[in-house]
Image (cartoon, rainbow, N blue to C red; front, side, top):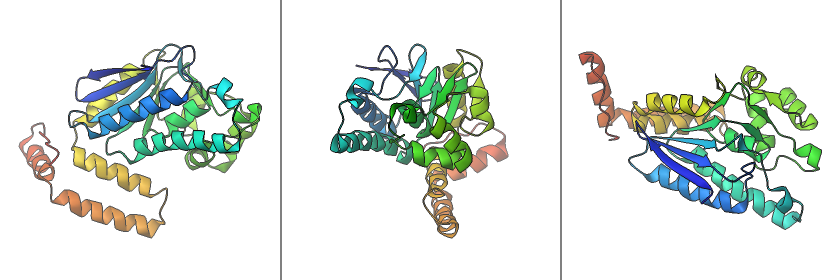
Amino acid sequence: MSIKISNEENQTRVLVLDRPPVNALADGLIRELMELVGAAMSDPEVSVLVITGAGKFFAAGADLDKLATLDAPEGEATVSRVKELHGLLRKGPKPVIAALNGLAAGGGLELAMACDIRVAGKDVKVGLPEATLGVIPGAGGTQMLPRLLGLGKAFDLMFTGRLISAEEACRCGLLDRISDPGKALEDSVELAGKIAGNAPLALAEIKRAAYDTLRLPLEDGLKEETKAFGRVCETEDKNEGISAFKERRPAQFKGR
């Protein structure tokens, strides 16, 4: 196993990438991660998923020895498998937090961008250095980075291949929260606990509607949002949430 699993309080599951020395995203690790992400998304005991890395790396990207041998069909197949994993993260109903404990480069940053929220230690660096290796960010980097940063800043990072600090990444919108060194996972689990206290059906609808804005024209996205609002209006959780607010007590959501 290249991934360690732990279950924290407040229905938070943590997956730790543990493939020394740099947590390179080899095929075996991708397959294992797909299996574990799928299991977490379907487990009623899990409300929030946190992905992090062991040691000094979140993930340093592709296995360079494997990359050196790829021809065109093999290259397409490789990034297609990674994108299938990213699809599970984005389309799954549960929030996913990337806790960047160390360097996130290339495919490692693409994995983090496939998560819903990114938390990183102040000492972390991130970037897409593929152009320095003669390839491109092929596992979603050329598509997600411009959406997060705008074209100019995305081109800056992808054309130069430079790594940037967590502070710069947070300022430009690539990261969402900054932690003290060594505290990214702890802060992510704390954040996950706060999220897990909310209605799971509402969280799933928020996630689906928000990602719709990346693929739909505004008017179509607004229509989908309207349907989602109607769906949650018929849930027991809505009634519980309003009752708890009026009674000044914590809500006890059941996902119904």
